Amino acid sequence: TSPASTDRVNKMLHLYHVVGRRAPTAADAHPQIYRMRIFAPNEVVAKSRFWYFMRQTAKMKKASGEILAVNEIRDRKSRNVRNFGVTLKYYSRTGIHNMYKEYRDTKLTGAVEQMYQELAGRHRARWSSIQIIDTKEVAAGVRASKRAEEGDSVDAVKRTNILQFAKKNVKFPLAHRIPRPSRKGLKTTFKANRPTTFYS
Image 1 (cartoon, helix red, strand yellow):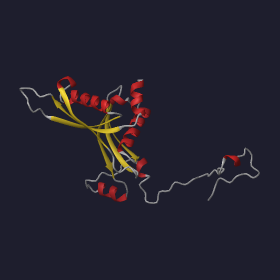
Image 2: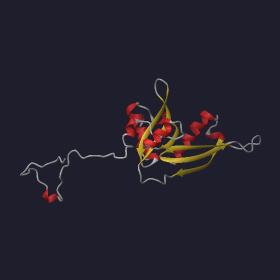
Image 3: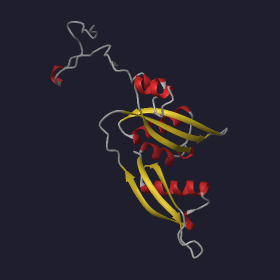
Image 4: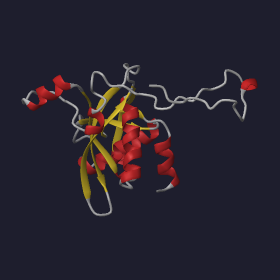
């Protein structure tokens, strides 16, 4: 992985709404307008990715087109943890692979950052070879899962590692609690009595 691609992943991602079209000509005064939602660290990278996908889908490049608008989409609900589903494809050394991943985060951009880090670690996928097809917020809990099994059009959590947090009585026990001194002056290397770290 090149230093430039690693730097893109380490920076915080933003969600941009990019709108563009082919440059108007005498033959086509009102060309078709295209828009995309692109995750990128800044506007420059978002525009670059827009033209990258345009070359593949619409046979259009930057020299023959124009950008109409670039707007950042901010997440309003960023105080509660939510479940997100990401549909993607990535190019490996052997071929093209389709995937569906689920993550828990307070923001959609945070979930996408987790996805990039996981694919880089588990699949050695580079930032430039990953294409996000769709992102959505998925519901968790028993009711959502039952409605999805019955054929209702509900986006429910599927992955086991996310389902374990969907229980109503989920707990995070502290197996061993290490007492800390209230201030630096009370910190000692040795104790007169062995500290109790386990509480039933």
